[in-house]
Amino acid sequence: MNVLDCDYLVIGSGLAGLSAVLELTRHGRTILCAKRELEESNSSNAQGGIAVPIAEEDTIESHVHDTLVAGAGLTREDIAREIIAGGAERIAALEKWGVRFERKSCHPRETDAEYDLGREGGHSVRRILHSGDITGAEIIRALVERTRRRKNLAIMENVMAIDLITTGWLKVPDDNACLGAYFLDRKTGEILAVRARHTMLATGGAGKVYLYTSNPDTATGDGLAMAWRAGLPIRNMEFVQFHPTCLYHPEAKSFLISEAVRGEGGRLLNAAGKAFMKRYDPRAELAPRDIVARAIDHEMKSRGDACVYLDITQKSEAFLKHRFPNIFATCKKFGINMAKQPIPVVPAAHYFCGGVEADVRGRTAMPGLHAAGEVTCTGLHGANRLASNSLLEALVCGHAAAMDILENPRSSVRRIKIPAWKTSDAVPSDEAVVVSHNWNEVRTVMWDYVGIVRTNRRLARALRRIKTLRREIRAYYRDYIITDDLLELRNIAAVAELVIRSASIRLESRGLHYTLDYPHTARSMAQDTILHDLPGGSTV
Image (cartoon, rainbow, N blue to C red):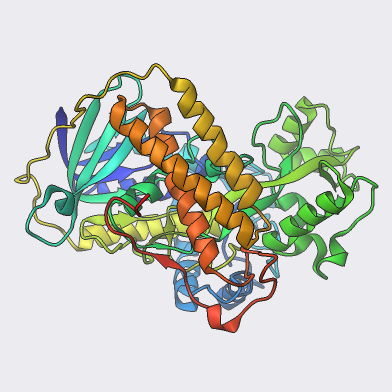
């Protein structure tokens, strides 16, 4: 087995990972591992933008207030203030690196023109920096271009992390610390290991745990599952954000209709053509996402409709083509002219507010391991993420994690031998249908029983089924040579259990967690849900 050595190992090529790499490569040999090509990540799919209090009439305190309101009592105010206060400096760095945010003047020489700021649900003012409706793609484009030119960097694409390598697992007599990770080369099937002084998880979210999601196929909770199996504490996994408006079309896969469409005046209509949001919240379409998603879910179920509609036909075609070029073109491809007809939409799993416990600087409970981005739970999002705070967190915390690593150098770990990957008696699988069947079953169970609205009975049924599936997956993992599909199945099943167990503990409705058995918020439960299992995960 090939063992690679480096100073810094970064797993994940989204905004958090790339932000860290650009700092780390200036100080030591760095290896960046991407599950697909470098450009593919959840970050690159972000449409709306980055929330930063940069307008003259805006303040850090106003942004903090909006974040606390959305977080429903679980956002840590000190964390929110630190991340929000760090936004402007990181935006300046992005622009220096070539990111082009929309400004009110289109003249190329007027680079100091006022930003064309958007507004989204839960924000009291316009504060969303954007690049049309492809903000994430524009940011990742600029960072990838810069990253590929870095010296001191080895980029490994199409490799999937299998598990973290820790001193505890190796039974080294010391505090349990991270030494690197095992990887599967997705193209050759070979196993390799990377040994590093510092490892950083920036693996993103886990939307593929659910049957319907806005996330790309890569979002299978790999970092979350690996951290849990390594024995790290996992926090607030019950808070899964369902984006209210994914395009509803049989040929459209996971295409998001940005919240910015509602920010520009889009109204939600039921199948009868009636606006309904004011019946659920006085802020109507600009209410936080949990409220909007539940309202749509209730409207669809009470009426028996397959979808609702997002109507922005009061805006001109010229405006929509300029403000939402990608959304307009995609809708048009599916026969929908959003300037002339409402867009059919449904909620879909979008963002995990919970994750690996980490602070703003990416520090986790394990020496040698940092984490940043959606894989973490820093305390910024609380029980419900405020729109466009996710890119802000990834940007600020990815950079802060790199700086913390550089300020706290770790002694060499190269003297510790990494054992070769053992296949034992594993053989190539001749039953791939089992993997695909279990893939679908995990995601269907989560959608049907652990979705926007939950009950004790649904959660108990889901937990029983997921535990059974995890036993089957563990046996399959032991008996057959691993593939990326099997690794992803193993991870989504682990994340599914974490979500169900966390949701079962929270005997109230708060933020993104809504249960019919406890429809009200309880003051006694204004605390985080923490799962801290032994290495290897819970007993299944």
